[in-house]
Length: 462
Ligand code: SF4
Image (cartoon, rainbow, N blue to C red):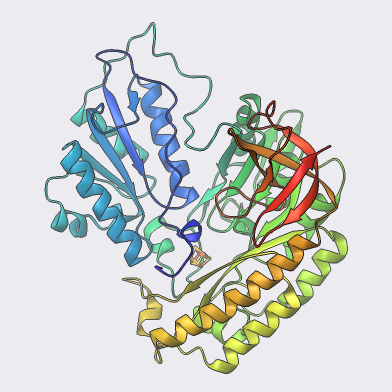
């Protein structure tokens, strides 16, 4: 993990933005949220519940009566960071409740930090709340602590993650998420849509749809149908996306696996009258069929280059983002070369790459022929060189084009924006450094691109 760019580390999360200062004597909780966007959504849910019960949310350790640490346990490096965060919270505050993925290993945590007050696993919201009630009893003021109209968000107000399901039915050998988070459990479509609508009503201009396996959404519910407004909606990703695309916000799909029915999403991305962005985040992980088989990947036999060509035929502007693992056990030079050749053909817009790392409990640890560290590093360098060259060429091709951007931040020097091809936190930015002073976060404006860098663009307002 140490060789990955920081913005691709699943154990890094955006800093929490706390909504308001607590009233005096209000029982107050602090939150340290580590891990991926899915864990961030869990943190938001916990904070929303706590605030509805009358707790204040403290932006620092000193103002908190207790601290919740929402941990990541995906990789050894993420576990180490989680343990550090727990240690820091113990030193700075003393009353610490641990939850999240690493919470699935309570003995491991207690071995390092015996003084913690409670440990709960991922998405055990009720148990976290019980632990908080025990540590710091609630004391709501009925005149002040009304249920807030908007939920607590740890992302900036103009974009929000929207979690549609939890868990995963697959058993990729390098992954322990199904052990930690369980099997696929999808939310009913009308519940997702209600939340999405509320977020948009509260000013959210971009929804980031997340799950472990977005294309599988609804499979566990047997794609049941529920009433929504004057119609019925099936809990299937195509139907859900069609409805989400009607909202007044950009909708970005993450963690989509290339199952055949994904083809049905592409017309929504290409068509007028839908706000589903022409952007797909698909974790391919590798291109050689034998490596994919050894990984036990879903859709391992899919002819992904054909799929990509078909998607681009329907939606020429589609942006494809993916992540890959190099140096997976048994990966030969020829298999790696297949991946490089595949990249030449696939011409993906955005790419992240991880060097394979053993994760405690993962089945891939026992595979033969682990790749030496220096070979992994060499392959990572070669892969990233290619990916960067593709990304750069794609960005240069945008110079002169007029595109829509969403404003993320405005400071004294520039407005930091994103194009439809850029997801927050993981992709690049477009900067406007002239005539930006009246812009504000969440504005969506047309821009002419006038300069391209390795990952970022510059543009001027029209
Ligand atoms: S699809 Fe594979 S990598 Fe993704 S969460 Fe499921 S088991 Fe893990």
